[in-house]
Amino acid sequence: MKNKVFVYGTLKRGFGNNGFLINQKFIGVGCTRNKFALYKDSLPYLVDKPETPIGGEVYEVDNETLERLDSLEGHPNWYRRKKILVCIPSTGNCVECWAYFLITKLPSSAILIKTGNYKKEYYGTEIFKL
Ligand code: PCA
Image (tube, rainbow, N blue to C red; front, side):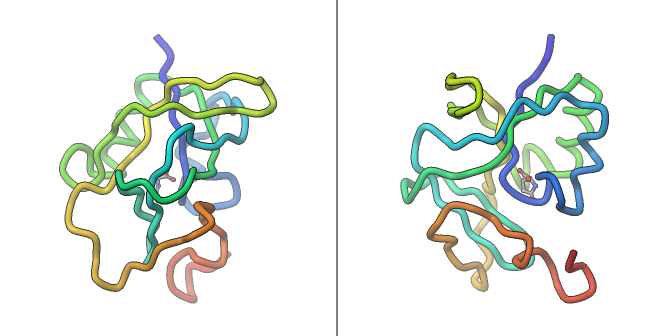
């Protein structure tokens, strides 16, 4: 069975970890049905706290890819994969997707991204900038 994953950070197109989604099906850009909090320091962190809908991308991934994403994100002890509803304008549907939530303590240097959209210029330190 195929797994739908909502990515909001480094797994998005144009970001450093998007290669993990190679050969997987891009469904569309989407926005979470409910509000969450998106923070960043050198990494983006999704937290289950109602602030704003979060923007990202939805992919349909095979089981091997999901396992690779789980180890990348440190599921279930660092980020934890949880199901949320994501609305996809291009299909007109809201679908259940996995998303990785930070469940360890938020770093004190992390700041809230009020727009709910993680941007390229946020990613990493200078040498990692795209
Ligand atoms: N990668 C995952 C979770 C946090 C991150 O940097 C993502 O893009 O959804």
